[in-house]
Every structure is written in structure tokens, then in C-alpha cells.
Image (tube, rainbow, N blue to C red; front, side, top):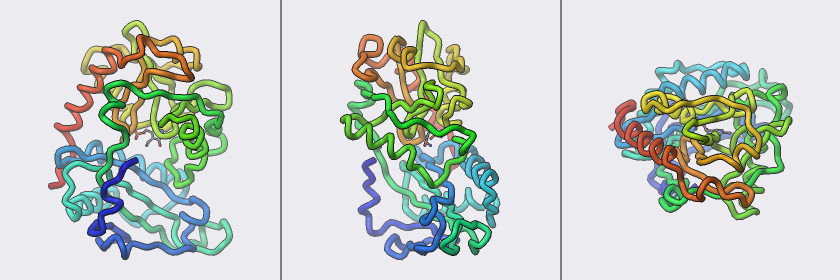
Length: 299
Ligand code: PMP
């Protein structure tokens, strides 16, 4: 991810109720977010001075917190306000906001009940995950050997600070010279990508795996459901194998950072005619129009 603000020394960070300089934004080495990945996060986008699907992201954050028994001392409205304040402090019009909540400072043992209180920090930055060329030509993907863990061990709906599973898969992608990869569940069915949801198109119908196959219930995935309905495109949830992707007409990924991006090759198999498909392009256009026209104002 290219992050122009990561080198921006005047960047302001929201940390536990205060907006401070990036250089002063520090957390303890005893924070369990760091010691154990015990915490949660959200990635949110803003377009043209409005935060896209802000309430949905904050609601998912609170669901993640509830699931891991993390009692938050803030209301959803306060977190929304903190997000808007951080964006304003950084004078951002288009960008990406990373909201992180850690279990807080505790002992060296696992026990989360010994942690004093959760910490929250918010970073607002400029990002461009993929090049314009990638959106025009489509990505090449591999299937990762690393599997998504079963929901019986940890629900994929918890956006936890422990992304090692996804990082192991991302390493495979980078070693193969590609940017994203398909992750399968324990049964070998398609779950999602390392940081995106997967869609295919066949004979004019859009398909995506049900989240019960091991994916995050992506907010951009949800937007595609809305857009298909609005554009009169049929969409079905379907358990799928790699074969379904190899033989589909079109394919694309969705994610807050990636937005909607076509992929045109998987494991050396060309998808469709090897260029982004008509319905994919229609949905990309519709997504951009929507993202630039709705959202919570913050300038
Ligand atoms: N799957 C995973 C594992 C992710 O990290 C993300 C990014 N949040 C997604 C899917 C896409 O979800 P969203 O559209 O909500 O960003």
C-alpha cells in the first residue's frame, strides 16, 4: 500500500481522546494489542470530503469488540465523531482511515481481565493500493497454500489485530510476483482473498461465496449487493471451487482499500477473454459514482 501520509511528519493522530503529532503517538510495549494481537480494527475510506459507509464500519467495529468481550468506554457516536475529528485535523478530502482498538496495558500473561483499559488510535492517510493500470487491465492472482482458519477457531467476522494468517498468504502472493491471492477454507472451497472479497460473473449472473464459507462480511461486498439490485443484475451466493473461478466469464475483488477491482488471471489460467468484463466495469463505474456521492460529511 503506498501511503503518502506515512512520511508526512505533520500528520495528526487521534490517541485516547487527544489529537496529537504523529511523533508523539505511542503505545506501551505492555499493550496486549502488541503482545498478543488482542484488539480490533477497521479500515474506512473517504471520498470527496465524505466518509463512505461510516456507520456500517463503526457498527462492525463494535460487533468485533462485543465478540471478543472488549468493553469499550466510547459510544458508537463518539467513535464516529473521533473519526471525523481526525480527518478534519489532517485536512483530508480523499483518503483512508485506520481505527485501532487494543485490549490495553496488561501483564505478560494472556489474561485480558488484567488489562487496565482499551486504547484507541485513529490514523488518517492518503492511500492508493493499486495502480490505475491494475483497474484497467485487471490483477493476476494465485491460490495461496495458507488456508483460512475454520470459524470454529476464530470467526472471520472479528477484524482482529492478529492478521498473521492473511500475512502468511500475502507473503506467498508477493513471492509469486502478484498482489493478491485466493484463500480457501479447510474444505478447499473459496473463502476470500488476503484482504478482499471475491466475486465471479457467469452468463450474466454475479456470484460470491456465502460468508459462512469463511470470509469477512465485507462492507464493499455489501455495496455490490446494493448496486446489483439497483442495476437489475442478478446476484447469488454460492459455494465455489477454484474450478468455478478458472471457468467464469469475469471476476473481481472488493475491499475498502481495493474498492472494486477486476482480476483476469488465476494460477496461470486466463479468466474470460483476459480483460475486465462488461459487468465488472459497470459495477466499478457504479461504485465510484456512489462512493463520490454519499457518506458522512467531514470537511
Ligand atoms: N476480507 C478481509 C480478510 C479483509 O481484511 C477485508 C478488508 N477489510 C475484506 C475482506 C473486505 O472487507 P471490506 O469491504 O469491509 O473492506
